[in-house]
Image (cartoon, rainbow, N blue to C red; front, top):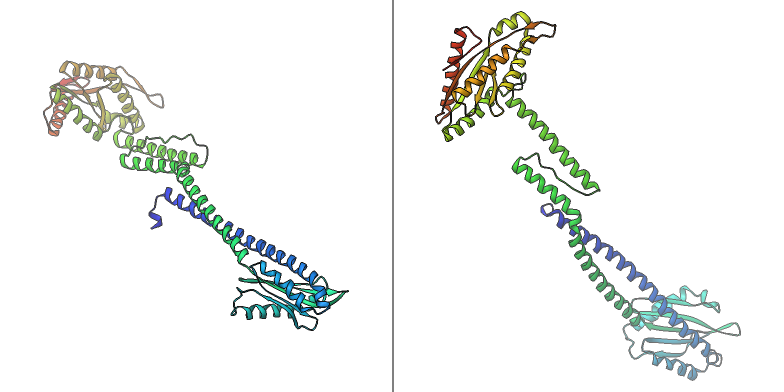
Length: 420
């Protein structure tokens, strides 16, 4: 399904997913680093509290004054987050204890067990005056600090606090981070929608140009661009491809419509063009002149001088035909030494004048061969002029009429024209 979506929407989705992934990774890193920072900060506050209490607890432990110890621990009631505080003497017996009213009886055994385990694991550290044990969990944190007097350990202080304040700060940060991420993602999606056209417009223009060329077959179209990036190379490549197709089509068109030797229209093209000329003349009720001609004794030229000389004669006669006919007349080689000239709006007078120019032009054009041979050739011509009737059959009839006149010109001695 994704492959059916337009590239512009794919780009928006890609940018959105990339932005969402980047924001997710950034948020995860930020939240984790905040958790580490807040947990250290909370433990640092708890350390400060145990430092104060342990300093004040020395005298009570030294004199085993349980009353004073309980009074000092009772002051922790002012902090609702302190769950449990215990002072043990040197033998490990509890001298005083504070237990918050909010401490769950179900959770207390777990607190005590985990703290006791940490104490046993870190017994060596608690023998030093600067030693301590700290522990943090999801719902509580604890600090254990030894109490020294005159360089000797006289007791152990344990303070347990909940982590509600820490998680409250983390939740605030998560909400702020989530809101910031959502706003950032919306902004990035908005910008991607607005800016995607900078990347997709050149592609869409190229696609539209390709579809237009495929529909219209207009290979002469040129796709312009003022870009200087890779899209310019893509556009240049597309234009170069169209240029190659144009050149190929032009070559195919020339091969299909022109005679390769003389450059004149070939028989097939001549009949198509003559059909168009005849339809226009019939619509305007104007005559169309048809001249059929061939080169006199052309077989003798090939037999005596060879086919290269024969080809040269054909080319020279073709030049005379093009020079003698008018710009809007049709000049074609029908095959061999046979040629056709169709005179648009060709009355009999106009057509015979063109025929005479051709005859005189060929007669007055000596031809020099590759080896210096000099050759004089002549042509015989048949002339026919009439207003065409509707239908392709009439074209053939006009050509046959001019062709019959051509044969009469040959029978009459060649180098002349005969009007049908």
